[in-house]
Amino acid sequence: LLLQAEELSPEAFAPFGQVVGPSEDGHGFGARDAQLVLDRGTPRLYIMRLKAKGLGFSRITHHAQCTQCLGGLGDRPWYMALAPPGETPCRANLRAFRVPPGVFIKMEVGTWHAGPLFEGEADFDFYNLELSDTNVNDHHNHEFRPEGVHFEIVPV
Image 1: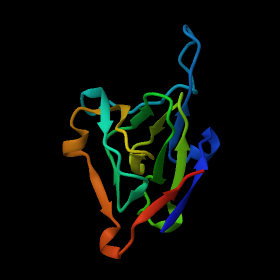
Image 2: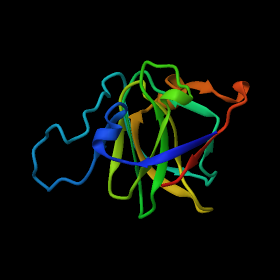
Image 3: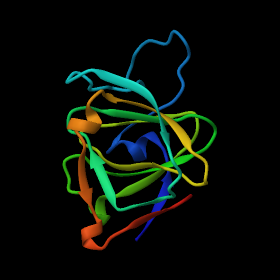
């Protein structure tokens, strides 16, 4: 199934989390900064290297214990498919966004997500902020494959 990507904006992304862009040095903490939930474990900030696999997916994931921040390193756009927290992911509630260079996204606790996904053959590095055990103890998946469904994001 084709899933048309849309351009990322704070308003469009609000059901899933926040879009965070640059702030001037010395600017105080406020609503434009990532509002994090990382109090249920040890926070982990790392650079995650992903292999190229295209813009398709058949599995979507959520984390029930923390927010997650993702940002691409470099000057390439990338894509995320998302469904709102607390809802069973389905075609009707899935949306895809093109994330441009220079911003990162913060996903709310429980936000379903597939990605980062990107075009091209080269690996892509992302910074990732979550808990140290998120991928072991808080990685909940929904598989579309048993339903015979595979999504392909259509780039903007």
